[in-house]
Picture 1 (cartoon, rainbow, N blue to C red):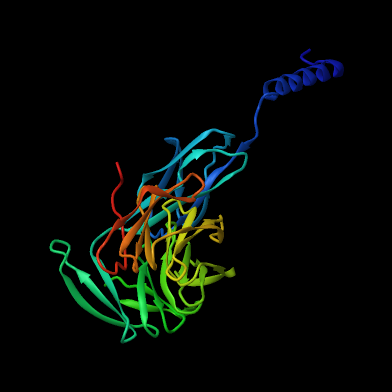
Picture 2 (picture 1 turned 60 degrees about the vertical axis):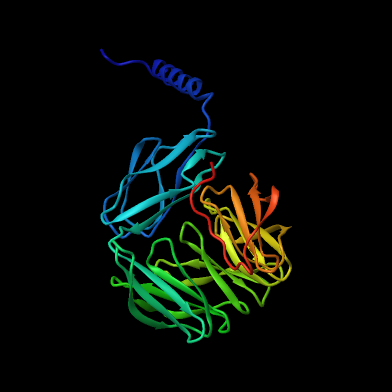
Length: 348
């Protein structure tokens, strides 16, 4: 009594199929939104996209939101809940979905500040000194030394605050350490990694996943991936060319562009950074005499270069493609033999 004929059933199925096709005829392809988390050691991290679609994260590595998005749809990834004892920040968290999955969002977590530590590279005795700082006064307390390579030139701490890297200028290596709970440095299982000739500095990108070394004697930049334990591993293409006498490399806050001060050729090499961290040279731009250091301002809009020989600072604007353009006033005077430059805050 409640049955229907086979012919009627076929007609209903056809009608339903046509209705579905009619509804989806204007549908667009959809894509995922995600990236990678690094430095996470606490529990309770929750991310959001566009104020919803909560995603709990329990470990370092890739993440993907469950809700897909169509091309050109906006995305805005934020931290809803910070993990216990840590603070996580998002890089590349906003934009519009291209005709592909979004995979370049970085979430980096660092330990909450209970004390802070300072490290000094001692060039002549092949060591790194560690200090603890009083939180109220900032006064340093000496903790001791850790052995480094020959003529340690500079020291760098990764964004997670858990690892230290030292460029050993005459040792053609980088010493790598883990920072202990009391600020003491412990050499990693592989205490050093090889570089090019006469490394001057180590730079870690904002995501904490890649490191770069300016090799002053090799006219090159060594590039590495950073493992979960903080250890450096050379990329498949271990070095890329720079100018003459590169001494310092800076990465912009987005992690998409890098710049190298070339002291011997009086210019700045420019690179784009691929999704796997590899550098791709684009062009060079003139600087002053003997540029030895440079910095990208926190907004990612400007670059400043300290020129040792001409005693001035070159200043540039960063274009949409990452290329530098000299400002209307290309240089400003400095003191005698400037050797470093840094920037804090935002131009307004």
